[in-house]
Length: 204
Image (tube, rainbow, N blue to C red):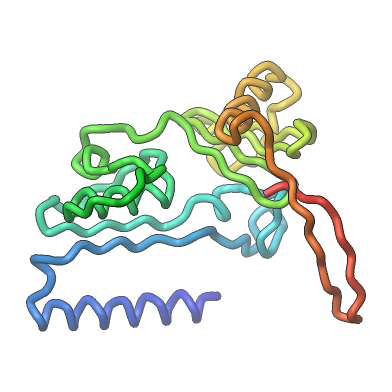
């Protein structure tokens, strides 16, 4: 993993160096994002685990370069990757044939907006809801709640769900709202090393 990160860092640097040599930096927008992180021993876990959508999995890099936006600023705004598509198309004046689901982040990037009030995600049988104050991880049937206070517990070590059932319900309702009232379920087939296959219904 460290080797792959080093490789990406090295070749991204080479790309930026070449762009500078070609005088492209003053007319280029750069978005550097990822899809998800990876647990490397945090919470005694390794890999990408559905019930463990903790910061190491969910807090992804999102770097933006615009020659007309001053650099060096860090934002803790809540955004989706799809927002970068809307930001890019609006920034360069591209008219899309159909409206995009993302929002334009120009105000966020210039420090004038706090972004979205909350974001949601899902992986296999679990959903994830994050506001600026809390994170909820729950089974898609609204069970197995994990609730974390981001101010007092940013690393997600103390589950306070049992003491805040109403808040869990309110946050889960946000996931339902984003899914238009019902979380989708798909058939999923797994092929094991010995060639056997198992099928189950999972939510994504």
